[in-house]
Image (cartoon, rainbow, N blue to C red; front, side, top):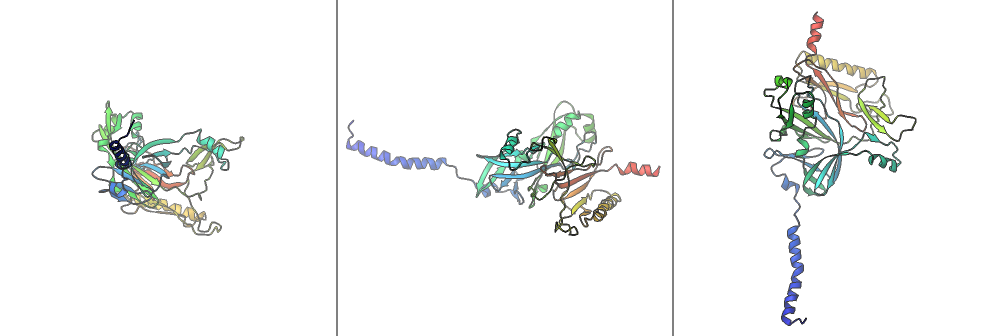
Length: 400
């Protein structure tokens, strides 16, 4: 084929324009990375361990992560109760404590619960460690859309992650034969005033409305709520910084009544059982660990619910203070204190060990509980529940 001068000029011009055209198309196709500031305009920021942003208009909860992979503790508690001992949904009840990992995967961040029920204490044997992790899976419970990335920090939409039935109210109601309920998302959302941030813990409070999805409600729920076709409860999530490695777990002695954790350690000698049990306990350290007379670094403090009416509140505080004497006599002087919960403090805040007053429709149990590290058994937040009916039969017996 013969290329004439005219064709040569046209071909040269076409070839010359190709790189420019390609650059223009590429520039148009490449998305401009959004900044965190641009995606949080109009939001209220809560600074803390993991900053969160809340928006009253959209109801969104955005979470800021400092890098592509972040680990924390996820602690979940029931902030409000149903007021029924037979059904058993109490203010202060808790779900399982979890070690959670936020792991970036492309344009989303996966939320993974690590599996600490099966372990290998043979830390020097990487192959054995791997054999455990590849035998027992973790739980990937959510995928958070990534909205922005800025200097290594990630902004994700955590609304659906937070607004869910963490304490399985739906299952509890079904098992109690009180009806088939489901979370009504149009009547649920983030409770902004009680969503806060602190250096070691981020607190997220959620209001969840449960609506009857089919059938009729049970008789117990019908006695308690104004309209048994729907009721609203609050659940509370804490994202807590992982404790350091200086805590020493303590083996559970079956002769002593302790709550605790249990797991399988596949590195134990074959003459010993696989299951290991450690007690749940608070960390208590001396300023100078080598000096048995050294002062206590951070005493255990339990806060008494101001909602307890007098004279019971004063009596409860006085009774709790007996433990101050017990610690002193055990050689742990100043290791325990009992005080009233500070005015305005949220009893769900992980910084406070609490003794909460639980009102129910009928007489029920007083129980102990705690939130903590499922890896070690360390208690990070004690949560005792005192039944408000307990003083009435006691008083009746004393008068008899």
